[in-house]
Length: 337
Image (cartoon, rainbow, N blue to C red; front, side):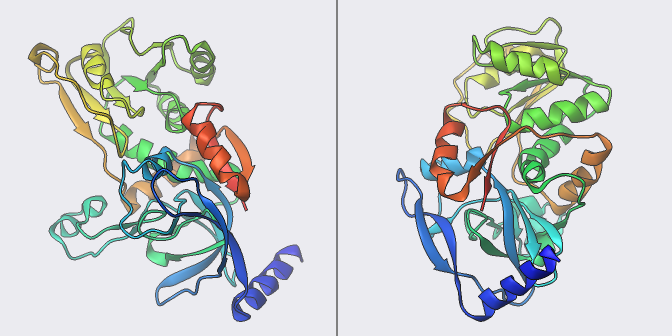
């Protein structure tokens, strides 16, 4: 009955041209601005969505700081969205990849994550820091109903991008995570379910986060300035800190790989060739494909992945972003409109 009433309310609001609340980015360096906007209208091939939860991502901080460019502000952030379709109420997830051309050489080669004309949710397309949004139906994922909306939201970027980064580690058995935020919280559970070992690297002296990593199943946790007790087969760098690249290279064995998992990183300092030699490699992860999403969202319940969340009302988006910037919570912040 409650769901049916909500559907009727959604239909009435969209038909009457009613408005919605949103937190809007206007310019680099400025906080998001609370606004009232018209509810958007879905075009051909699009879905009108009522947002139930939207996780906050470090990419949103990079957008605010101008480290990742938004071509046409104002813009509504948010690319880890759990929503229901209007009017039929299907539960869907909206990720970072929001549209691709399907025609460029990257798309035709099966690399839609590198599409030369790609559009990204919360960057090129208005996202989920609002009560309603529209999204290309082809790039939305059907979601099962076992976990709450709030717990599911972080899977849609921290989980998906992390899963793509993990795929670049191949069959590595000992994997280091540099930076133990939302993605590492999720991936540690996946890696342990797969029977592999996690080594967690945090800021020096961050014993709280190191303890959390051990509780999740990391076999070792320590400072990013330290070498692990055994050479790693692979390392994933989630923290946007360039000096971690040579640190990770020193930690991996010959033939190992260092994967840079963020959309932005500070400059990588020069390092001696000897720590790259031995067929070690460094590579980056860019965006995701729909295949990544389908695979991971099917795997997550089998691995019993549980997310650690801190919830905020929509109007507290700036507070959530600052708490993320300063590491004031474990796991993910989630906005609940």
